[in-house]
Structures are given as C-alpha cells and as structure tokens.
Image (cartoon, rainbow, N blue to C red; front, side, top):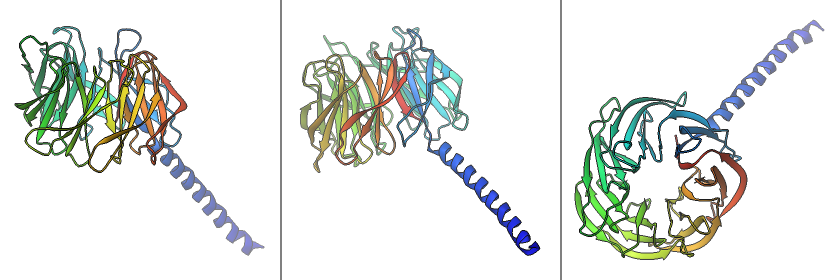
Length: 362
C-alpha cells in the first residue's frame, strides 16, 4: 500500500503540473491569436482620435474600441517597418489645421506617445506613405504632395510641399504608393486625372493622362510588382496597368461601380494575389469582387452590399475576413471571405464607433 501511495503522489503532482502548463499554453495561444486593429476616425462628432481593437482571427469578432491616442481627424495612418513609430495625418480643412503627426509606438502595450507634429503646407492631407527615410502626404484640397525627412528617433523634419499645377484644372492629390521594389512612387491626382510616376525621392518622371472625369484615387500592386490596379473614384472603374517598363501601359479598364454612384474609394488584393476588392459609395454601397487571370486582367465575379459609406477596408492577414470602415454607419463591419472563390458574406460582427474612415493591422 505504501508503495502505491509513493508512486501515485508523484503522478498526481505531474498531472497537476502538466495541467497547469497546458492551461498556461492555452492562455498564451489565445493571446497570440488576437490581432490588433488600428482605426483612424473623423473627430467632428464623438470620436477623439486613433482607436484600437483586438480581432479574433478564428471567429472574426472584435473587442470594444479603446482610445489609443487623441489627435484631430486621423483619417490615414502608416506604421514603420519595425513597428516603433506610427504616423497619422490630421486632415484639416485649411493649412493651419493640416499636419502629419509622429508617435512613438509600443506594440507590447499597444500605446502611442506624440513625438512631434509638422504642418503639411497643403490643406486636407488624406494619405500618408513611408518610403526609405521620408514621409509623404497627399494634400487633397492643397493640390500638392508633401515630403518630410524621418529622423532616427522617428521624428519628422520640416515639410516641403510640391504643388501640381495644370492650366485650367485644380489638382487634388489623393494617394502616394511606393512600388514593391522600392524604386518608384506613384501619385494619384483626382482633380487633373493624372497618374504620376516618380523616383524614390518623389521627383516626377512621367505623367499618364486618364479619361477626363475619371478621378484616380487609390492604387494596389500585384504580388509580382508588374501590374498596378488603379481605382477611379468618379468614373467608378479600375484601370489595369503594366508597370514593368519606363511608363505605365494601360491593359484594361473595367467597371467597379455599375450604378453611377461616383464615390469609389479603396482597393486591395487578397493575400494570395488571386482576387481584387474595391469599395464603392454614395449609391448601392458595397464591395466589388474581381478574379485575376494569369495576365493580370480582371473579371468581376461578385458584389457585396455594406453599410453606408465604405471608405476604407482591409483583409485579415490570413485572408479569411474583410473588415470595412463604414463612416456613415459609424461601424467596422466584418465579412467572411471564401479563400477558394474570393466571394464575401456578412457576419454578425460589427464594432460601433463614430465616423471610422481607416483600418490597419498593427
């Protein structure tokens, strides 16, 4: 009997230890599965700046939003590659209220602290891109793009604004897109219907004219880097360009918005590069779904309605979900994505927040 007792006690202790270890491992697994979503907002109503939410990539659920940092109208964000610094525009309506903000960012605590703030010298900055040691902003009503040096501590140097002047036309710069190889930058000018190709420092190399009234807005690149997909806000079309040569060559133009809403907004590829998605606003708001063939050309295969004013969206890193910032529905809506067919379907998951306009993974 004593022999059985002596053996049993260590076994019980071992089981308790293994159980505790398994429970700890399970808790760690739960924590590592949570992904952090950063949300930019317009602060005209109830929002106060940039928010964060924890996303469960298994269920598609989102935790209640928490204020990350107070800042005015952070309508577009960008994160440094090492995740040590976060940058946010302040989309003001004039030069005095328009700026780019630099923050120290701590991924371990999901916290941000302001380093400095620089005026863009161009009104309504609506996009920020980081490339090499520069930050660029697209200044929509200012008709210019701005460039600022990024110091080793993440702070921003003084801004230099570069206006686009076309006789009889008003420039509206809407986005700045470094190519995957890092050699070039493309800039979209909605007002002048131009796609500008620049070198890595932002110096203009060529201009590609689009049909008048197209309104080029956002751009996505193929995984190979040889194709660029340009979403035109006003005409509601997607232009497919071959960008492997010195100048972009138009391969295809296809409708995304087929009801004439005139408010196409954002465009992204699936992580596997097989499908393309574009948001459309102002009428029959929703997401267009395209398949991509081997040549990079598109075929429209679906359309999923969303809430009101789907300005910006993102796909989950594993490609199983698509999350949409619906400004006028005041929520982030989660859609399930079929990775085989590319098609979307609604889920019950929504995060309610005043005027969300941008979503980005930490």
